Length: 107
Image (cartoon, rainbow, N blue to C red; front, side, top):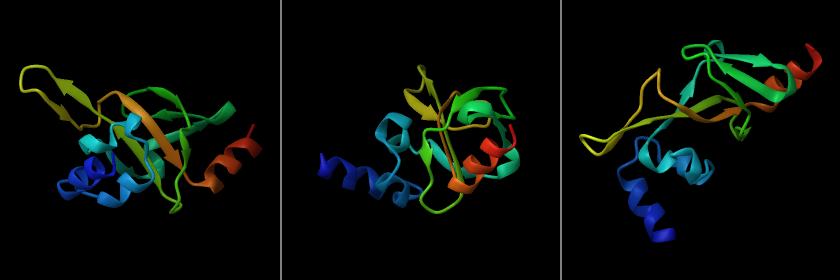
């Protein structure tokens, strides 16, 4: 298992993400990236709206560096690879702890 992570990390655009984002978020396919706080809108009950798609997702976890991250990819069945783009299906959202706390007090 560790060998697989090391191999994936060699070709990953940001190997550090592999150290804390779960594989279920599609991180090994290079589908996670930092986003601006403006790209997400805080909703009640720790949910977040992805402004570019209208998708609503629960916060997956807190980001360890105080930044916002979104994991979103769609699989291309023709070319057999994952495509990262703004309109893709959002799998995971990571937010700074301060933003989650602020959304709680805005209710």
